[in-house]
Amino acid sequence: MTDDHVRAADADRERIAERLRLAVDEGRLSLLEYDERLRQLYSAKTYGELAPILADLPARVEAPKTVAKQPLQVPKWVIIMWMPWAAVNIMCLFIWLATGADYFWPFWVAVPWGCALLIPTAVGVLTHRTDDDGPPAIEQ
Image: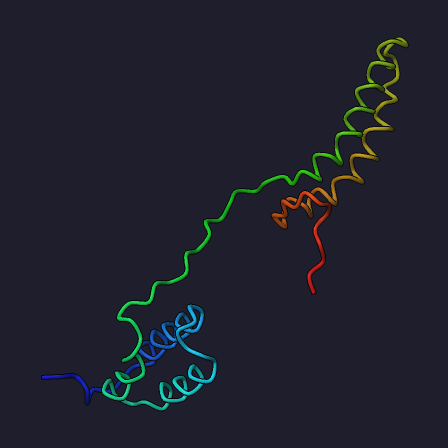
């Protein structure tokens, strides 16, 4: 006994639509064929009407492999951007120590410059850009 006369659910249609999308991604269907099959799919009422939509496709269409989400990485350009800040502030600390270490004036070099570098650093880290060429490109 077959289920060809049983009414199909929306979840069944969505599952088949996903398989059709994967078939297009793999090059098994053209966009015109995809469109025709989607029309058939959403007008089908029973499992018997759904069966021909996938009949000439492989039984199991592999889903594209998803890339595992990488932990936050610091792009090289961010590290390069902070290197002069670190070098200048180390030099200021040595000068401060050599001149008596009373009023901590290197604060006025380190803090404003560091605050100015925090914004592009946050953008670079949060956008997960690891381009070696420079800051993140603006996508249109």
